[in-house]
Image (cartoon, rainbow, N blue to C red; front, side, top):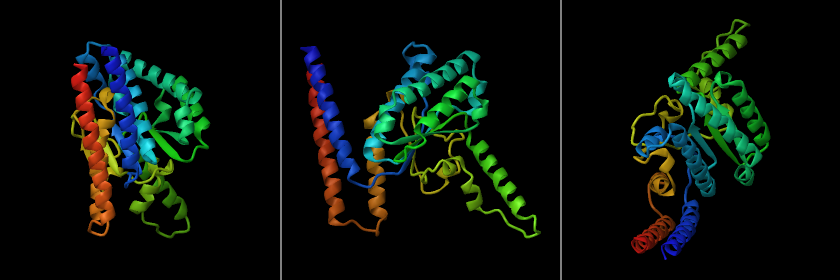
Length: 298
């Protein structure tokens, strides 16, 4: 009986989640969502697991979140996979992370049905030359295999810091201006010049709309500071990254949609009220059914 209830719960959960995603996709959808995937180590310690297992489960969470974003119609997903500062961690943990990166990059290229289905191009942003040679090779292969995909973008930032990205962009902008000033004409560096050399811009990413950090920590940790400086919604969820899922993303998307509707024309048309009403009804029905099934399971 318990197995039957669990199966029914999972089936209803999946069906309503897909239905609610379709409802949300009918409204305004952010084009670029970024994630600080925080909490893998605390998740592992809380469950008496090896740290490596926490990072592995974090990768599975990334797959799930990426699929949800793609089904919603999000054009670009950017994730903070590995900071330059993370090289300061223990040799054992860094080695495990590099092994995981190599393995999962190869999996994406050999069994990348989701990337192919949604036309996802993979960009690895950061100081790739700092990675072990075997991981660099996996990066090159993954980017080569997906380079012709043009519907969506997945940016893996590794090894990356925002300060390094900004510094590099400024250096490139200076080099460009120096080269164009050989005739004696002065060419001042503008914000647009720096923006043009940001890694996300070079990778074809649209402007950032939402930045989400898991685990309850409320800071950016040197991630996309330039991109998040204007008109970006910041959300901090207490959920550890390996546990993150659709129900963590739902209120973020609803909040974004309400704000977009509010900003458009400064008013609410009847069609917007209808759309929001449908979303609210769907949400209430879903939560009610889940609660009933949960009681039956216990």
